[in-house]
Image (cartoon, rainbow, N blue to C red; front, top):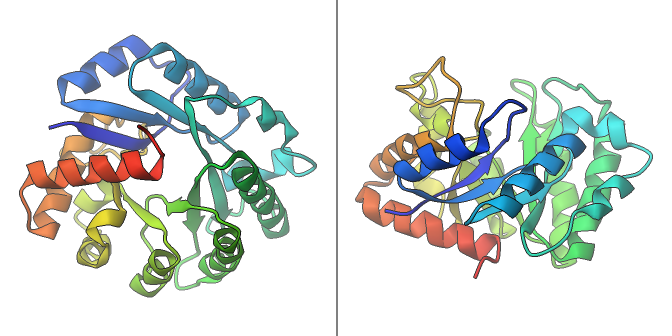
Length: 257
């Protein structure tokens, strides 16, 4: 099996050689190191440029939108064959670490950057409980982005089935993390049968969201096999088939030849 962790973050004190080697031992063949702010994007670029089968994304999580409200020009330096997407970007109305208006403006700027660079975007979208303002705003903005030729993934999706289907109808991919293994995450498991096989991506979101049986530990790409096992179970297919399918999807979405 050749697993592809399509979304993880490089921590400041991570030994990249150790991280890479331990993940490869667990059949993780491909890696997408995701930048959630400028500094993390720099680290992700370094990781990608120094290891085989590692690529990266560059962007600002909505928590950090206020840090680049005036301009995202600092991200123009990220380019080249190893850069495969713009992100992690989007809207987070759950914590609202940045004002909603600021989040929307920065999100729009990054969507325009994705179009300019001809790259897909990796989207974070989270709402307050029993609200859908973030999903509604995100959908409206992404709808215009897609009309202009953009491609996107909604990473770590945990929302309602209705919104997920709307994003899928726009051509979006859906990322699934270790949350699927959490005992109280039946709502996420219920979504799996409704994700088309060719739109499904596997993620760890490391160092966050360690799957069962590693809850309480620092997450790692090495643990993505647990995500694959649970998704395969919910899809009622052999894990080998699930891994081959999702790895192919990742290569397609990120345009990796």
